[in-house]
Image (tube, one colour):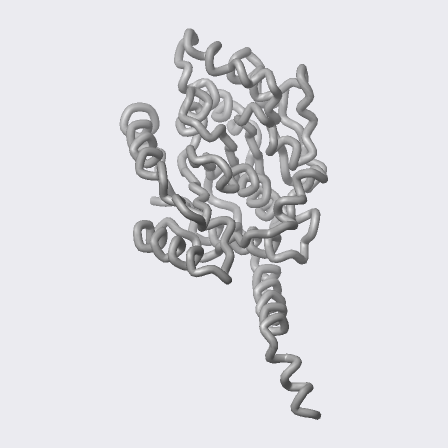
Length: 295
């Protein structure tokens, strides 16, 4: 064999492909066991553009691919999670609005996602945009989602529930926090990554103290990670220093495929399974499952 043949395998691209192949084999070989009881996550960050909805959709799809039964609740009036999961959410469609503001049960509005037979979605419609105002005068306004979800889970077994909420702390987000037992915070590896995070953590502590003593920040996921830049490495190191227990080893790369997938009504897992973004979310799902719920 010529020396040049050896050199072909030592290029950065070849090494990257070899690394991805190894990681994908490892991820595909994992078997995820069902948690002892349903794990309910609120995925939240008051800072917009951090990959919050993208993380909800792709983690849900990744967990479902491993055979877990997953429910996504879309609490964002924009309905982007509903779109990405292929759920119908035109105005007037039975949705999470009817559960929170009306008297509908989750069973009346839940839809199966075409993405996977074990993935389901409670869609959001534009009706949800006015829900904040309507909730103000309601009794137990912070607990409406929690009560509906508890009633639904009594008769239907799910391994994971992922709640996508708006990038603001209003009554919809508070409902999400009260319904969940775990918070997953996506943090982008860019300037001002930790901006607003201390306020978010204070708000979570207030909700834990006054409304939901079970709530805990269990998971932090680094998103939009570009390994070629010093900034990404610095931000990742800073986040891991502040949150060593909560931060996942898996990082989500900045990826065109991840960005494109929602426009096709799909997660990146379905849109381009062999992409780096798909692999990263599979690894994150495995890590979350293997870590288990916080004690």
